[in-house]
Image 1 (cartoon, helix red, strand yellow):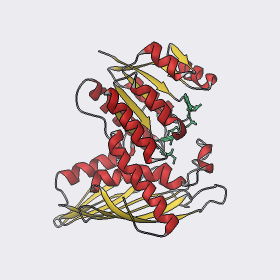
Image 2 (cartoon, rainbow, N blue to C red):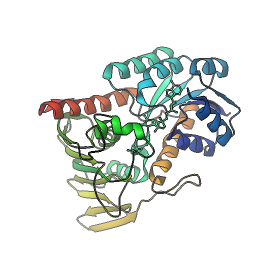
Image 3 (cartoon, rainbow, N blue to C red):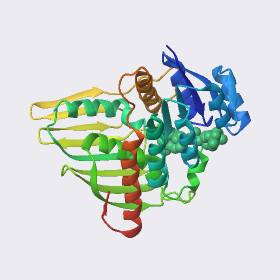
Length: 338
Ligand code: NAD
Ligand code: 89Y
């Protein structure tokens, strides 16, 4: 059986969603929607979609899809998720899920009420290097994880594709911090308290384009998470997250150029963890594009009745709360409980 989907938001990033849906068996995007008719029509033409529209409510009522994939920017998420909750079995919402915990909780409640599954398109945890690290940690390769450093620093011009980012106040925390905090929670467990410093590095952007946060987890583990969009590095590692994680029995590091090293008393094992570039993809975005495919693959399985899509809206509420706590900690110079 083919699960029928509607994609809402035909902008820069959703081209990756569309290409990935087209590659996956058992799903089909049957209609696309954008308030900008020219963008919706262009997607319909480029991806061979029969139906397009500018009014999400009218389109969902007409199509009655199995799933809705929301790829708009954050300001429209709550209204679209609440709408989709009444029309589909699965609702997927791009990050940032919401700007406030209140909005995020309302979306979780709306889907709980109708019984729709709700997932947030948090694809970074689905990147191949991160999946491999998680598999090693889960298999006990380093023992209990005690300390982690996650670093996302680059100078790639993200504003060329996403000009709206140049006007976001808490830019680094809300654009990439959400991804990093989701990955850290996935690897190290929930966060108890944190402190954070932010910086405005690029004089051409309005917001804080760098941050460094120190996290204490409920397990007692400690993580340091850092991000900068204005670092001069050659070769530029964008969009790789570099990582080091230590347990009592060993350490794992992921370095630039997709090298994973597992250090244990008996020696070091090294491997290449670069994902393939999809036929529709391009470097350096292939790391992210492959993770979109991996994230969406779960949706097909969930629609088939096998498992859920991770992370759920309810789980992402905790990630949003952590990022909002980091914003407060940076503003006040305090240690904040999450
Ligand atoms: P964009 O502005 O290029 O595209 C968003 C589109 O949504 C626009 O075409 C806009 O007209 C449309 N839209 C807005 N409100 C709508 C509504 N109510 N109904 C229908 N259409 C509506 O933005 P983008 O750069 O593609 O980013 C979209 C989201 O994807 C952002 O939240 C961004 O953070 C996220 N993103 C995620 C990743 C990732 O790796 N997960 C990467 C890049 C961007
Ligand atoms: O919006 C961001 C994301 O989620 O991944 C990379 C990005 O496109 C620019 O920072």
